[in-house]
Image 1 (spheres, rainbow over the protein chains, first blue to last red):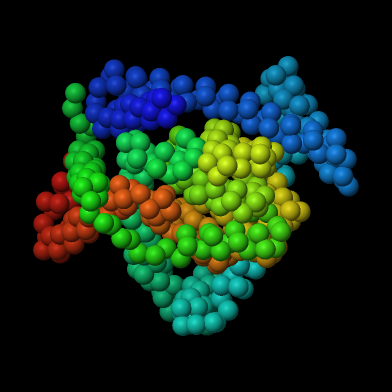
Image 2: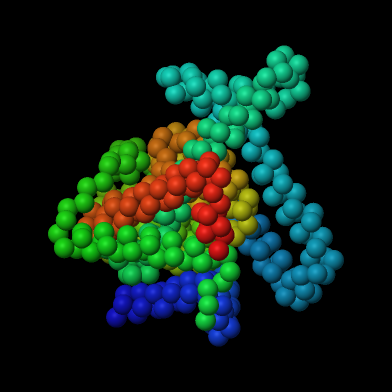
Length: 208
Length: 259
């Protein structure tokens, strides 16, 4: 029963969502909306559970007091509880709450995102080392594409942008669409296995 | 109750694909032996965990940063299915396993998956709940926290299976810097090149979805992979018919698709 009930529920909800996507029926659409709202409520509870996990892990690190770990963990718990309380008491639109969000969180996110450029350079260095024919083709295509996308490339040879566009729109797009179709059908098969209860690893334990 | 305009063809195509899948699963159930090609990335999982055992370093696993309520849900489920297999192996070989989670709703599922895997291996005492870690529901806060975990705990094997976005390359590069054997997989096409560049093995698109069937060796699940191939043949036939008919000026198929 521990496994059968969740599988039966997953099947019923899955079929409801599929049918409400394809058919124009007001009761079905309403039922699907209600189920989606339940999902939001469950996700909110899950956030509470996850927050407890975060506090447990970092409280343990504070108690252990190893190196500077306790300080980082303390800062995390203090800021997490502080911001949560501020949001609950003053509301998320209050200027103090907004200040901490805009002054600390937004620049932090932007900083991490900005690091992508450096990681692309190191990954490109590794990928473009000519070790075999495939890597040589990759290097050549990338070089032509890069030259096609910078003004100096066009100055060197006017055909660089044309070849670059061809590479992106013909071989690259054809490969991507092939993968997309395969992944789409794979997704449908995966969904069907879950709905029919053939694949139950998400409930814990082995796959079948 | 009528079909929504613009989704009629999709509906019938979905039914045909489901028909192919059910037929091939039925054949597999009746005893037809299904063999699928080797997937190097999945075969390397055991090697990666063996490496962690020898080096005395942990294994890191991330089932993607996507949730279970959107288009990327199948990838998250595939990530959890592989997590189950990886956890069984880490339990068997007594290797610490760190699982990092971004989406709160995935957290209890990952926790239960790992706990059950340890239980099935008879190693429930070795299960450490503190190793299943929710980091943050914010994309780059999660990424930053994971950079720190990988740099500090230096896993010998890094598994990232599921939906990833802009953080994919950064995470794989950090794993590469600490010398982890990396096995990654995603169906997010924009992230596949980054994983290929930074990982030792990458599961591309449908390989990720086939993982659960491949690892379980369950004939019914393998049958669904055969059904996928049948569906792909049908889709390819529609594409070829479309190309030919359009070349000769016919708009019949284009009109049919838009119905």
